[in-house]
Image (cartoon, rainbow, N blue to C red; front, side):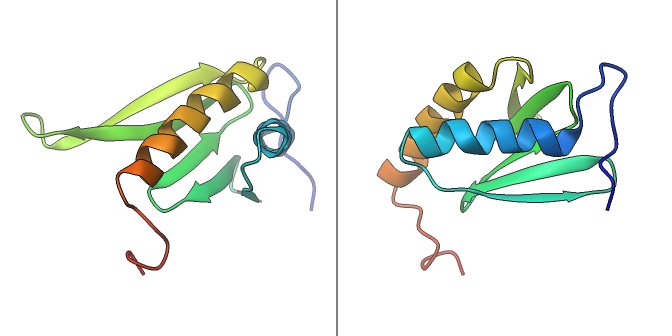
Length: 104
């Protein structure tokens, strides 16, 4: 399967794998899935990072007033800092008691 490239020449799969590697350096395991012009980094229940080659984005909460999810994003050219931000969200979810077993 060939990787789709963005205008900048970086594929979503490459950016997802760079984030996965940075998360692994921080002791967080993640799976990467690729297809349809996007790649996903699956980290924890409720924590999936989407990658399009230009940016990463993930859910950070829920806006009751607008009745929709709130997202954070980070440029894909900086996977180290993006991984730190995702790691903070991961820690929040773990402290809140979210677990793969309880949400299955």
